[in-house]
Amino acid sequence: MGEILAMTVTFTRGLVAALALAALAACGNTRSDGPTTLDIGRQLVGQVLSGRQSAPAAPAPDPQAMAAEALAVNKGPLIMVGLESLGTTQVLALTGENGGMRTYMTESEQAVILRGFMLTGTRGLGNDLSVAEASGTAALVGAGRSGTAQRTMRYFSADGLERPLVFDCQIGPGPRPGVMIEDCTGHGLSFQNSYLPGAGVSRQWIGPVLGYATVQTLRP
Image 1 (tube, rainbow, N blue to C red):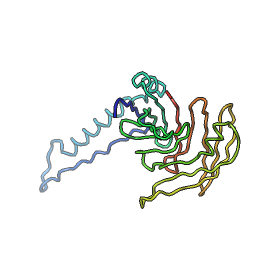
Image 2 (spheres, one colour; image 1 turned 90 degrees about the horizontal axis):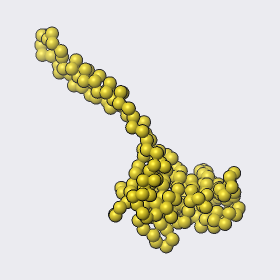
Image 3 (cartoon, rainbow, N blue to C red; image 1 turned 120 degrees about the horizontal axis):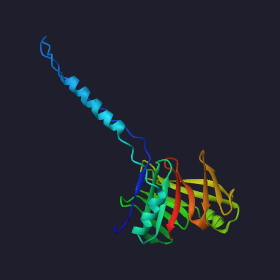
Image 4 (tube, one colour; image 1 turned 90 degrees about the vertical axis):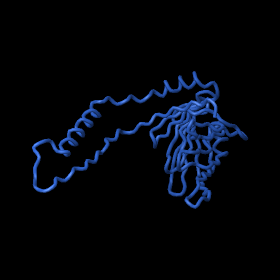
């Protein structure tokens, strides 16, 4: 797949491992004065837990440092994507372009597909967005104009069929200069996408499970 730099930062709490000990049953009614297998096992557990508690947690890499390193290593187009529900930030490299759609991918083949500044699909993340159709929103946001538009989000269901969800959206300026907001409702759901096209930055909803992704263009 070429020189694709993929760095993942996972912000999860540390898990304390549970150690199962099997104590040997004593035969008959005899009693040993020496340490039993259970005593030794308890000592080992204490040593392991003590060592884990004293070990300092590895600091989470700085996204700015990740971006700088990615730009230095990979000379092609790059984006940085943060998945809020998973607590991850990744740098993805351009791997393909077709009909105005660009596919950015990690080394593990997790992919985000963009059409211009609009997120149109994901791959390999689980509960993926098959395709998003939001040309009306793209036109309004790109022109900096207010208006209404429909957005269709397609997902694969458990039966393997692609199911479309259609949302009604209101597009307008946000609270800060240059920011455009897309408010969408439908099917008992509501979400709000934010776009700053001039800076190549956006926060877009992928779906009910994956939630929001922040997308930043590092190199167009």
